[in-house]
Length: 418
Image 1 (spheres, rainbow, N blue to C red):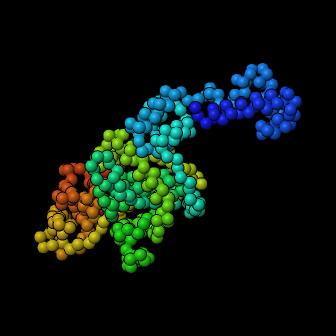
Image 2 (tube, rainbow, N blue to C red; image 1 turned 120 degrees about the vertical axis):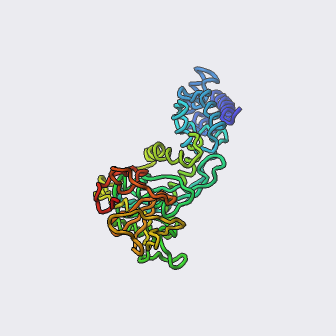
Image 3 (cartoon, rainbow, N blue to C red; image 1 turned 180 degrees about the vertical axis):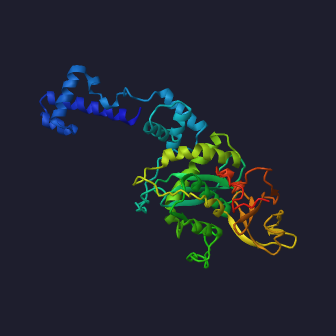
């Protein structure tokens, strides 16, 4: 018998005793009500209910089962699903999966209540004192955040990977999300490239002070505004302001987003049966990103957009690593451990001692430029990529992975046809 029923039994015994004394004129109605701790009106109502129905009439009607009470079988099914398939999920995430996968119709509140009663989920601890957050930018495209989180994202023994996320400050909408072995210049350029390809150029980017983002002359000091990394050079060429965060609290918006992702993504990937980086990145781009934004993104304070289309598509050749090299006596260019053999070109008999510029794209492919002329393209292993006979050369062959496959007409100065 639960405490409510015990209390109800004691209340009835006290009432019958006081009622008897009142009917024998030993107590007035006011005195009887005071002994019971109720008003005279309540005492009279209890007296009348007792006369009409006896002791059952005194039952606390709040203890009667509600007509809207959750079916016991459905509650047990829900608890069983949590124990067997979803242990460790937050209540909100679990409730979403129930509706999506198991035709569950009970509300969030009753689900949480029964999970707490069953001891499967602990009630959240009291939050600390409120800290005022930095106001969001009022319009999309005014500021973006880019950050990465190292975590065991994939199920099984896949090890830890870095999840690189680029998101909007105004709405918290994710524009780019993918897994890599380790974040760096290539992954950061790729994230910005995916945003620009789909939405356009934006005003500013907020990042931490990682070595691929900024040069910091003194440990823990201010970043250099004059000596730029490859990533910093690319943003400057695109006219995007690069803002450095000097504390984790300054990146609170992206930090909170990663707390949500670390809780949800590994479980979602496991439910989807995904265990490889390649499959995960396809699923993140095609399925998860849209669902996440629908669930967590908010409406911007102001309508409109600060994104600007890059009509010349200059970003394609800017968002890459660019370094100058001197062509060797054998008409090759040294790059990392590769020897890039320059093919014959009608511009010159050879390029020995000439200064050329090597572009390394985020996927590892390469291109060699002499001034505005694109001399050749190479695979990540240094193999020369020759255009098909009669084919129209492309401005950036490797960018097709970004959905950027615009062709460059033959004779364009950015591509010298051999």
